Length: 257
Image (tube, rainbow, N blue to C red; front, side, top):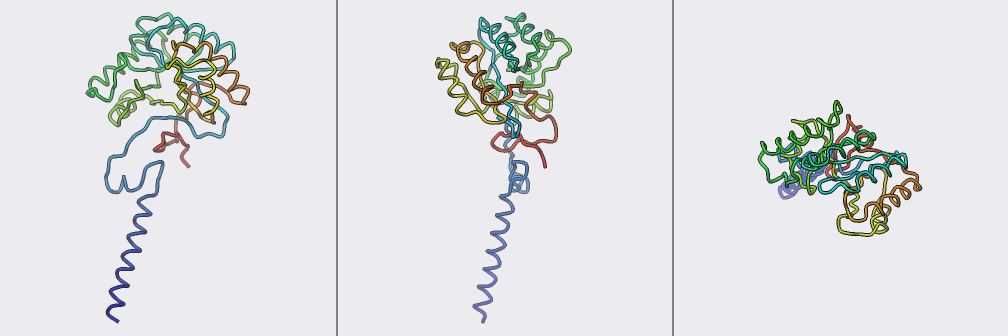
């Protein structure tokens, strides 16, 4: 009889342990309960794409080097009656202020892509703030009253420190992407378009570059393909949620229930 009682205690302990493990593994708003309960560091992530039933996607252009294709990109976007977001580096803004104004005057959205395009995860907090503050001021001096609300980290490199400073100090939403066109690798226009269409889904954010070799060949193919597939092409600001949301551990922005 004594032997049975000991076994029963161990069985109960095992059941409690399993139940605790199950509870701690549950995700709430993309964060495991265990991370909160045990005080572990929660890894922050930017917005890669949006969970939405609407057939909407955003196309973005990182602008750091060169501007000779930018006017044609803007004109093409307007010709197709769609929208887009440009992430501008500060030294690009200084070199091409007329291009910044042209993007803005045509109603397209502008975010910051840092001031000097460093790996910002390697910077001190003061230098992170300097990168963001300088680039935002350069842009806002040109676009007037409109505020910069979006940030894309150079090289897509981020950590908690960077995301916290961008959000808490500057009110910026950090934007990644879930479709990389790899246009900077010299792919043909058809190859770039194929990468987009094969990965397209509701809420996608597409990464392009304003001066890649074949972006002018690829862009009309992308625009026609996406529109013909029944999607609306909007700016990032029009795609993402601005309140009552969370970002799960895969970078998907979701509405809080």
